[in-house]
Length: 402
Length: 106
Image (spheres, rainbow over the protein chains, first blue to last red):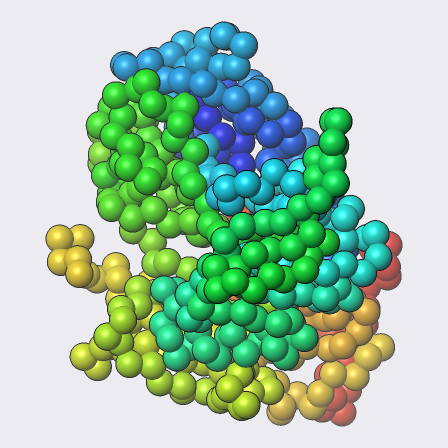
């Protein structure tokens, strides 16, 4: 292989570039990123960056020394527009093309929008530019903020806004936030964090639309409120839409790759074209698309190995792991939970419906086996269980999947 | 010189966080005492709550790993070292001697 093109210059793309060099690829390495920024870390955007405790320099994933070592040709602020049927030509914005022998698809996902959210004061939080815009707005004095969506981005953003002294309400369509991730019992415990943090939580109602006023000429009308599907209206100066992300596969529409909520790959991140692999949020690996930071850092090793081999010689299924910092609590979860699992608190406890002082450690169990672990502010025992789960997963034959 | 705790209160394999600014983590690993900056150089996490294996501590948040002897990261996502600090035991009391603010690994 003489040229490999990595499409996507965020976490998974950068890790893929590193792996290519680490695994001995010494040809031409092209990296394409639609944002104009060098690779940066997204998790702090909703936390320390928004709250003003971290600046942009601290988000950098790489430095000048590593850039020199990687010896890559960077195209930043350039969007990929297409991949030809054979997977040998990447078409860029403006009509330029790159001929390539291998492709790593790492185009990530973009924040889902609400219909009719084209109003001043409405934000999403996915990119550095998103975070800059929101941060600027939050420094203009106290605001009434409505966060739509009570998932991790919504909860962390609400927490950061509340810490800055704003009046915050979270709207969640489901009866409780985070039930798919944590199950109903633990979701209820984590939902209590909102109330402790002084944030109102409205659940069980969707959003019917946004209200705006003013505008005209070149300026957009400004958002004034959120209309809920139960008829209520929440007044708002700022609305943050945190309703999930959609994988960036639109540019692949003209390719021969199978797309279905992500780029379909085998267990080794390989697509039907052996010289095209996919990693990170955009990749549906062995039937699962994980929007997890850790997956984006672990998949490139296997993907690059298979890319350079020209076929799938390695597979990897890492234990799902995610964390969230909200209202001063650190939530960590690892494993594969099922709805029928029982939950047992083995350390610490629950007080007034939320985590007790000092947090807790909870195990999800089925047939006497631990399937997953949840911790609030108990990182050490959490790591122990997470490592045990990862080890036992390795012992399970790949064909014996549940 | 900052008193930490009594030696018998920090058994082998254990660690303790000292609330200095910035905070320091003291480890009892492989029969020795080590002190490093407590905050991971990648992102805000306390290394005193990390996973200890030999002389390496793994960050509890993103699994960056540091060598307690040198402060150097041994794997990503950390790219910068943590500072190391000298540790002494006087009359059974553990003390940390903070590296000068401008110093590197001491």
